[in-house]
Image (cartoon, rainbow, N blue to C red; front, side):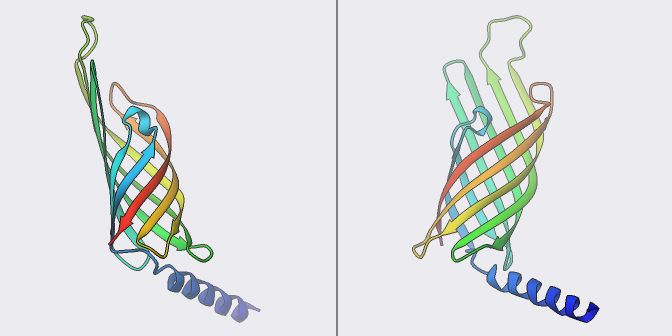
Length: 161
């Protein structure tokens, strides 16, 4: 019984790793979500192995009295589901900065903070070089302006090359 369990486990791991080779070396696109007030994020994924990648994102928002940017980096593990569907999980962090044009005497004009982030999502890899994803990214900030837990859900559209 023990031998059957070990053989089954080894076959499962080999199959999972073997079918997880569907990620591309490069993917560039947009991550469309609320992004904690930063708007759309320009996003780049770099494949680092058969089932691993690094995701970089840059989000920004500019209004009349408010400017902000956010840079994110996540390491992700990608696993096959069925057909062209895959799911992924990852962890990482980044840095963000706010610039307020406030006339109030006690409001800070600038604030920079770091944050840690997790990521879990599902994606569909089309036969053409298009990748669609839906992910959930919890983030916890370390700073005066943002020191709480935030949740971000977004749709990703990327060109693979």
